[in-house]
Amino acid sequence: GMSGTRDQNIFMARLCEQAERYDDMADRMRLVAKMGLLDKEERNLFSVAYKNKVGARRLAWRQVMHLESLESESQRDPASLQALMQYRLQIQQELNTSCTEVVEIIDTELILKAPDPEAQCFYSKMKGDYYRYLAEFAAGDQRTTAATEAEKAYQYASEIAQGSLPPTHPLSLGLALNFSVFYFEVLSSPEKACELARRAFDDAMKVMDTLDADSYQDAAAIMQLLRDNLVLWTNNMPGGEDLPLTVDEL
Image (cartoon, rainbow, N blue to C red; front, side, top):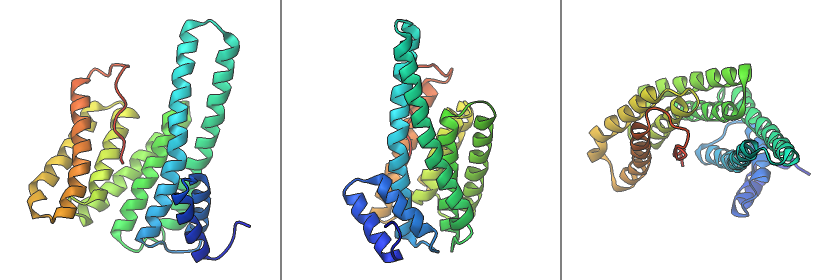
């Protein structure tokens, strides 16, 4: 069965990660999340599980969407177009279920029990990420709602980060990376995206020389992604359609 003790579920989640069975891993970590406080390592397991479960479907969705748009342009085969559309909707349904699940667990369990500002920031950023993923494929009012919720969660996480975390903290930098991607891709605000990414980069640069080797490497890796996006975005300001895909957070 799918119950078991907390320890058994953690053990199984780690096993699932080794076996790259992320759907199963997410099921296990969802159970653990409902059993009370997550420590830092468990929090990361929870995040990794859903990141991969949802990430695979986001990739699939983009691929099918791309094929669908090609088929739609060629107008050769209505039956193929119909099949592509149905398959895309099936993937959307899976994405919808998983993303909604994550934000529900964060709202009802995790954020209330967050033991410190870092955990609060982590969950609020994660909530922003999953509302952003919802906004990627939603339309109309649903898209507006998802985008509004994402922005609120990212904004809240940013306030916590600015008050409690150093600018070189991987969570601060990862948050700036994802929040700026949100402005660029979901809200189509390249100016805001660039301003946010540049500020995070500059703030971190000012104190980089105070870090030990490990922290330096962690920070530098995410700062490189911020830079890559800045280069990409400033070269494509008018928002051309054939943009290479923005770098998401690692």
